[in-house]
Length: 337
Ligand code: SF4
Image (cartoon, rainbow, N blue to C red; front, side, top):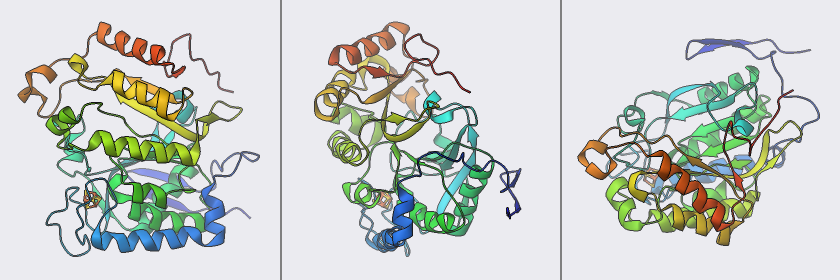
């Protein structure tokens, strides 16, 4: 008998009997960890790590259960969620025709001066959620028919996500998980997610440590980012799509082009092509607009030109990368059923 339960959150009414995941699709890898008890064990380890936090590349080593002093992400024991819902603005292979089930976490471990979501990332707009509430959100997104659960800005809430996932798995969650991060992740955290995350979607924001320091207060970003991306790729490999063109497992890298070449596109693409795989799926993003404190940096206080964006695409192709996302272009066409 199907269970019919209705819930309200973020103003949306959902019923769990609607839109079960399609039968016959490969089950997400994390379900095996759930059945063996390993998922719960990982959640316990991550929870302990909150007391001496090394769960992102900031390595604050603070007890987040007791204090916020020295906590760069300004997030304690509970995750703060700004919004959740089916989102149709992601890459075609993630959004499909029913949307990607995004959960947008507030606060961030990055400190980007040009952040377009600064009210959420810097100011912390959102509501604290317990593990049970976060699990309920995941199940609601599944009930709405989303193709996946897409954790946006998850680096500082890995422990809270794992705790919620244990509950959601017991209650019937069956969707692939996307880890959609700024790419400033600790190796320790990514190893805890081995076999849990189906699709890693990190940013590679910079190729130059000095610019990472200047614009994101993260002088070791390039090194930490490359270590994390190597580990992510070792776990899940190149991006694989199912018969409907929906991403099932693998690595998808996003690279936001900044004005004046500040994102270090050449270094990033060379790293991906040579050290990861020429088949890395890369989205070179053309959405930069000056926001937040970008006006304090004259070189960032303008949009990226069409020439700069085309040059970034050329750099990727010349590096040998051949899976470049270009929605609406003739190089990338997916037909939905
Ligand atoms: S998640 Fe990162 S920024 Fe937050 S307390 Fe832990 S190490 Fe610091």
